[in-house]
Length: 190
Ligand code: SF4
Ligand code: SF4
Image (cartoon, rainbow, N blue to C red; front, side):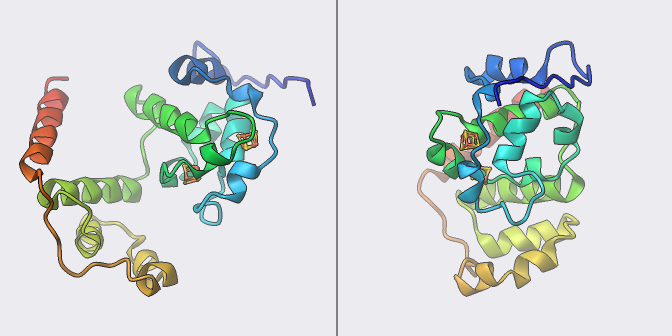
């Protein structure tokens, strides 16, 4: 430990760790790979890229490996990893920064099924002001998400009664729709 491994692939003008530090105010190289973050990650079993892997790859400037891994887009931003880190690192925020880098600069996009899932998620929020799970899955399926079978047969989803059958509206729906309209206008203006 203690030696910094610099296997730069020169994908960008600035090392990835420096870019992430600029965005988050935290130096990813500070991570000492104890793995406590990944031990609490609810997605650790589903992904090849657990939070401590992400931290290591950022520190090693492995932009392409991060960009091409679906795991980057499976993170739920639940922040469990960040809460568990004994070292003041913030893997959740680091992943947010990476997704921002990849999408904003055109260096990478979420894989198609994950884009379909995110779109379904946002459509649900726009319509009902909250996540209506059955509608989410239906909309996701219509959007071409091949993970549909995995979602519905997931013992966790069904057994824990996560699939609400009817949408419930929330107060402030008009405000939520205004946020979507404002974001849409911003997107179009780009
Ligand atoms: S818990 Fe913190 S120090 Fe440990 S591996 Fe995760 S980010 Fe690194
Ligand atoms: S924020 Fe992402 S990486 Fe961190 S524990 Fe949650 S799902 Fe895992």
